[in-house]
Length: 474
Image (cartoon, rainbow, N blue to C red):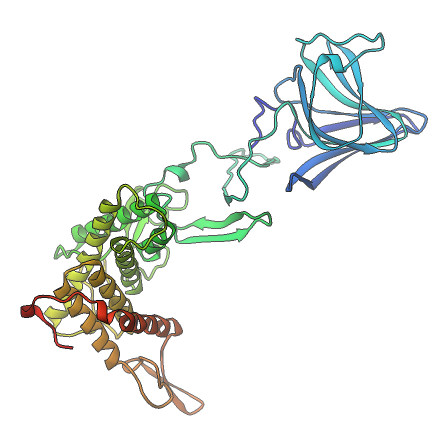
């Protein structure tokens, strides 16, 4: 955040940015303070403590940045029972000004604020080559934050991303890194960014009302995108980026599939980021099944984003979003509907072709999805997704067929007695524990199923029905 073309001195400008001097009985101590509060923000500063003690004592700033001129700007604080002068060196001669006690403040000093021993002021156009504090009497403490120009600041509260700093110097060395602002960061120009999030995005509090993004890495996966969230928050640009991402992933899936199947998603995208190389070693901005989670074929990574984009479509179509409609509301709604119904029509065709409502469990890279085990988890998402599609105006024949298929499948998996009563694990593998037979099941499956059934109960009287020729008995 420090720019030496504007700043003459700051706490990180050198390993030891403050020098001190004193006589045999005088005392001068320079100390770095890491957590001085300035305007409610914890800020690193340097502290200069002087005790004249019938001798001399002083200290100065190592100004390695742009040479200061008048008017001289210094952000400082001064306290103590003694007296000290602020001294500037101009053309090899010192000029002084008495320091007044004060809290943190920005001082703007002209040449007329300083005098030499002959009561003359320095020339106003000259470069200031030195800035010191000299003890006059007793003990004083002076604090410095910056000279000439304050650092670039970020708005508070703010989200702060971690960054990777790489030094290419091969010999042993010390690299000092302070506050900084990345210029022309590739992260800010990533395709589909910032709407599409990476595999891992952890946020922690910075203790000042803002947030620090503690982890932001791993190539994005379609299974970790939630477009409905952006509708609820009114983040329209980010929503548009995610819709583009999901639509492109469907097109890539179709092109790679041996049967040109349209609907499912390509799972991973290796964008132009430093940690993408291990997933797409032959290039950037490529779709891949070699994702952060090696189990990229898992059904959850396909039904989950489908349900969220269907939910987004329903919220857009029904006007359930904050504030006024964006100027591109029609485009957003149509694109969300296109992605949603591509998947719905494919799933409806799959069920009809197989003459079975058992959901797909695996999505291989080149061949059509497979049904290898029972997954009521997929059926729960399919039920919710189909309801949202129906309410948003999707083809009622397709959506009601999927609603019924998903619900009927869940009913077939329900257990109403025994050790697994209340679960939907009828077709899951069994195991023994303490002489009791159980079935393998997951708590998050149960939660998704309950939410789906609740949505069905809430929405059943609002459904759009097809023409009589397509009517499905329930």
